[in-house]
Length: 342
Image 1 (tube, rainbow, N blue to C red):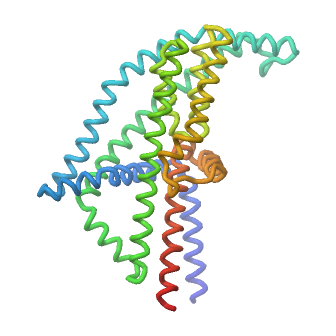
Image 2 (image 1 turned 90 degrees about the vertical axis):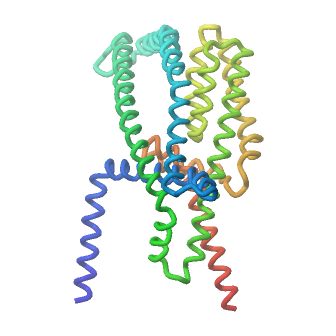
Image 3 (image 1 turned 60 degrees about the vertical axis):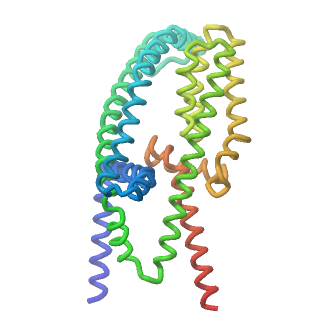
């Protein structure tokens, strides 16, 4: 009888796993909403505690915190998005002849070498198909951005209720933990929160430095749209390894019409800023408890990026930092328990 029950549980778990795997896109979307809600809750919890110490009701404190974050986001969007949109369109328009010339030259070299596109297409067809592909990618990106904006707004609503009921929810969740394990669980959760917040703070400071240093260098080199390109570099800095490479492409394309020497100087600037960031700035802003080995960061970015796409690349390092903090807390709690028994 017991073996039948175990077999039934295993079969049910297998069916559930197969169903979730089949619906993995929807599952990842739901997980992203709750992940955003958790991040917003962690960020806004100190604000709520400060307001509650002043006598503000928890519901009002949560509303003020969430509303303040939303207002700040709207101010940033209203201040930068019009500039980013107009200058990005101008950047694409200005660099379109350069990209077309590069692709035509590449097509001519392939044709000269006896290599043609699929189906024997020439360079013109390749350029047309590439432009069509870029347009389709932009359309998909716009739809994905709209969907992600809806998820973030829903996550803000969830974070409001989590902030209002955070003490009650914490108490209910602790009831599922055996009393002997509660100190270790609380210590582990606190360590994960501190590690994640430390990494986030260090990453924001590092991105600000990279953006400012890139802007100063581009201005000295006389590269057009230095502010826009520097903003791209600072924003893409949050993507480990991949971000700086992607942000360097428009910098090189913008400097290419000014000559090869200017392009090489722009490339040297990007490499110099990245070297300073990796060897001096990032270690200074990131505590030793939130820094990880480059190999671990590279493997985590590759694995989670392959599984989850851009969000896997973005969340890989903070997840590894939080997981390491969790393992350290568990090991420390076990050591204290063993020491207490002896």
